[in-house]
Image (cartoon, rainbow, N blue to C red; front, side):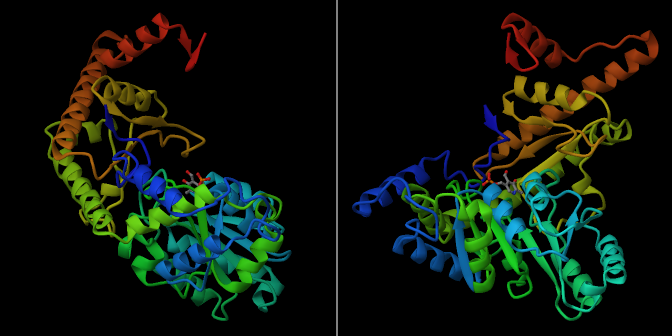
Length: 422
Ligand SMILES: Cc1ncc(COP(=O)(O)O)c(C=O)c1O
């Protein structure tokens, strides 16, 4: 099967390189314990951990770094410890679930979304907050804006520079700061994969960056990039960090070797390939004979391709939106799987209502031939669905597409209902 779903974007996991380097690191360091045996303010600290954080901060051009067991915990800690009563939280409407979970525990009462990637909408929300909240207007309290580097379900990048300009126009005194989740941009964009902030040279403008490390880097854990004050707040007031064990040695070792890979030519080439694959898929798909008709019939849409311009960054996440409020995303996923491609359908509430999709993730190890076959397979599905549309008009009935029938028959044969064995 061709992997169009896993987070192993640079192929470090699939190739076994990560495992081998990790085993070498375990062998290199004597006398390590599996567990950290304490939280960060007690016995959880170590010289290895501090040295690693030092290297991570230098790599990303940040004052300080703080490791965490995973990205969900890191977001939880950030949003519990950093916003204080009277502060306001503003977030992109497509922000990740773990940021929502973190915001629920926040002491900031004022929480307002802005339209996805829309600087005008951010401007409107910030002006409303400034006009309504005296303490924020006078600079005694602040606004924190939560965004992602690459959005996990849309595959687009945040227009961070434009958003920063809006924030500094509305709050010229600096009491409006950004928290960016770089889970999907880590390892993928920026110099040596350092992320969107580094790609745009905005290291000094962004207060907090959260990178998760199991995706493109194929490691584990997370790192928060920030200044000394924020780091100290997180260690002492971030509940997920204060009341949980620090990352153990094996997790730290995986992070360390992951960063070594990022610095190497091996991952530089893999990143270049992601751009090549994105371009190839777009060119082949949009020149497929059925593409225009499939778009007109609302069978397929890639919002990232609206307009003729190239995106500012080619990212590995590609959403194929299918006909709204139908099971077409499931049918397309069945069709892809029956033809040897692993890809999953995504529904509300993970994505907005009427924005059902199949989410593709491209990897450096996907070959050109696989991408060309993928285009042919998607094109054949669209042709089949157009035929079914026509029959529906003529006969009034609805025929299930072939792959869906096969999938339902297989489920019946293996007594799977709703994805569970009966
Ligand atoms: C955007 C984003 N943030 C945070 C997380 C959570 O990271 P972790 O899996 O390390 O808990 C994820 C996980 O998929 C994510 O996609």
